[in-house]
Amino acid sequence: MKNYTITVNGNVYDVVVEEGASTGAAPVAKAAPKAAPKAAPAAAPAAAGGAGKVKVEAGAAGKVFKVEASVGQALKKGDTVIILEAMKMEIPVVAPEDGTVASIDVAVGDAVEAGKTLATLN
Image (tube, rainbow, N blue to C red; front, side, top):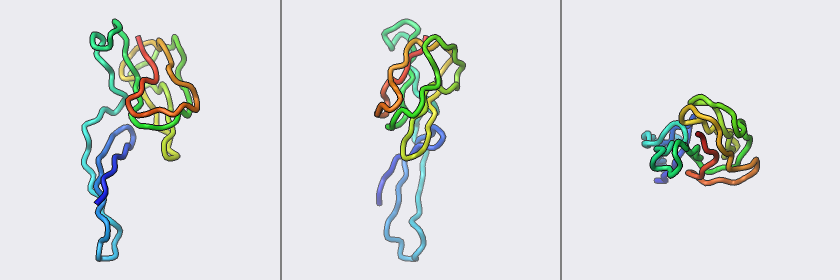
């Protein structure tokens, strides 16, 4: 058996794939939702160290494909901030809450790991 973590539409799933099915059928995948936020997690303002600052973090490792927002732009919860590319899929990273873009911390072409801060909102 092999374990994989797959992200679909912002939802993260742990998948176990069994190998060597003797019936000749394709392997059966069993997926169970993993506790993960749909959008990048938002740190509580007090815990973030900066009053009112909200981090927009990468939900998966990938490459920055496009920067949709700009510094000073007002965003609503769910608006796309950055688009990541991973395994030839475009993954939108959205604003976890309403706010104004304080900083964009990456550039197009940057490789990012899951959890990396991509932008900050006020």
